[in-house]
Image: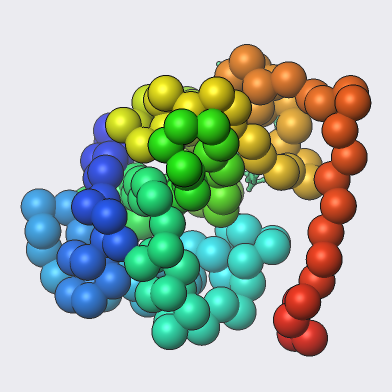
Length: 155
Ligand SMILES: CC(C)(COP(=O)(O)OP(=O)(O)OC[C@H]1O[C@@H](n2cnc3c(N)ncnc32)[C@H](O)[C@@H]1OP(=O)(O)O)[C@@H](O)C(=O)NCCC(=O)NCCS
């Protein structure tokens, strides 16, 4: 199994966002590949538009991608105030490579990144992968509720 190449993107991921760079800073249509990864492997993030993905990247505090050669096989990002709270978003490993430890590598990299490692609490929401996060020491909240205000008509 080819060891994946992990990229800690600079804030806003300018290389990926503007030039589509992948590993070794090679142009590889990375943003289109990220869109495809979401479409095929992230049920909550299908049909995201390129312009919105760019906006998402600009406004994320931490962005990490995983590659095998020129294939993007994993992605995760976080927002953080660097002091009190951070939230993980859009953590995904391609279906055919799940269960091989890549998700753990990705989440470890997110929670140990400089913008996150010193916050009081790291939150995340998950529909199907609670057990995975519990293996990584996240605890199910027994005294808080998740409330959502859907303020866009298309979601
Ligand atoms: C959840 C996800 C990111 C995990 O990545 P992964 O590469 O498959 O996980 P890993 O192989 O690193 O697993 C790490 C540990 O968690 C366990 N694990 C992984 N997925 C699990 C699951 N769904 N239920 C229970 N345990 C799980 C593994 O057995 C492993 O345990 P071990 O270290 O004792 O062997 C990946 O399966 C995925 O992308 N799923 C679909 C998208 C998704 O649900 N993302 C989360 C959105 S919040």
